[in-house]
Amino acid sequence: MATKKNDSGRGKRDLKVKVKTARGRKTSSTRWLQRQLNDPYVTEAKRQGLRSRSAFKLIQMDDQHGFLKPGAYVVDLGAAPGGWSEIAAKRVKAVEGKGKVVAIDMHDIEPIAGVTFLHADFYDDDAPDRLKEALGGPADVVMSDMAAHASGHRKTDHLKIIALCEVALDFACDVLKPGGVFVAKVLQGGTEHELLAIMRKSFRSVAHLKPDASRSDSAELYVLAKDFRGDASDDL
Image (cartoon, rainbow, N blue to C red):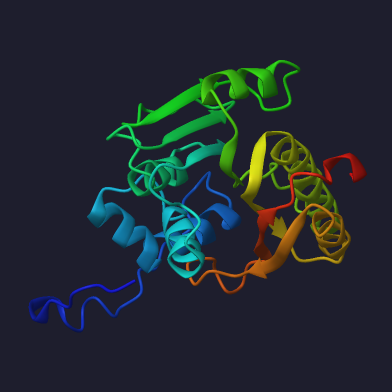
């Protein structure tokens, strides 16, 4: 990510914003707010009018691996607030009618040009069928930035996000066309290696990614599975 320097603000921009702990605000909330105020990706997302800093994670992964191609059919699981869907719609040219993006989240989002949004929980029994109907054909890419609410217990949080990834993977193997791509959030902790082994049964290339926009002090990782075999989902 490149940002232009402004000579008139030189010096001042290098100073970190410090936030005092206000009455009624937890220390953890103060730390989060201070981190947001000093995060260059938050600043750049606002400058570009993007919905979230996480958009840069998808941008960086796609710039490196090129899986969001014009005309592609994409499913975005856990889409709110819409940062990934927004980028995907632009890159597959959904607004021009060359591709399609279908997104789902239990939290509502503001409409996005070129994106069909389902306001529903992905765990709902009818959610997979509703996504398939909205997509209208096999997917080229299934992406998931889903994350469970943090409990503060690292092992528990890790198991929760791996469970989400497994459900997303099962759906991906049901809707992807041969050669398709699956990208999803995981956390470091050990179990993700077992998940990679499962993915290798259905994809010819599987790897972990840590985009620059993913905070260095975070256990967050992404797994990218490419070239769906199309004939091994029954092994899951």
